[in-house]
Image 1: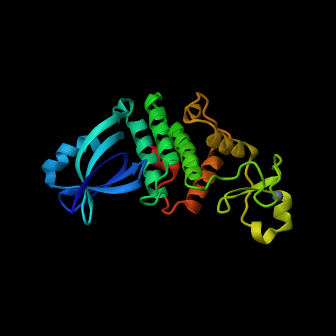
Image 2: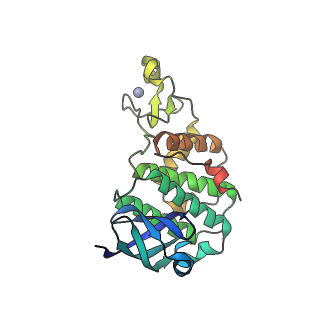
Image 3: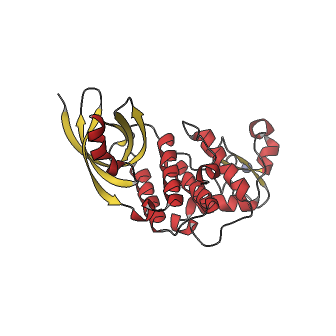
Length: 257
Ligand SMILES: [Zn+2]
């Protein structure tokens, strides 16, 4: 027998199911990521979709059926009006929600991740309009916090091998193993660390900054130019190594209008 329940969440992505129905992937605090079906033909969808198509925190009334969880009604709990009329920030937020969707598995509750997504929505909503370059940088910072939340926080201070604090210019970067390794360890055990590559100290600084600073700090007026390419490569290397699904686009390509 079908039961009714209420839950609150953020729509991460949607996809059509046949002619009339639509699946929504929703991040909730209590249940993690869940799939909800909006069905009942166009009239029903037309009633639901204004709430579901824009980034928002939504109360869902759900019918828990034998096969599917179906949306019976929605109320918007938190809106982000700053985003709705600004295509650059809207795209940025959608890109971030897409990354959450591909980085997470279903029904694994993660209140920390949920809090990060809420902080992100509030920060971008309050931000001024962003350039494509700035958007790419913000998305990379979001991806770093997302990696940390799902258990792949990169090591950016101590050597992965000997655990000693790394010294400027005396380390390499290994995306798959997830962080820095000191040059003496690379030399000592080259078979294990041959794939580690040189990165600039400025790149490591950006990685540390992205992990430790709140989103508001990522919006500081000065956009770093030094090491920005390498920073993006490092973050994308981590995503490719650790996300269950590889993103369709590079961070910066995803943000270019
Ligand atoms: Zn070492």
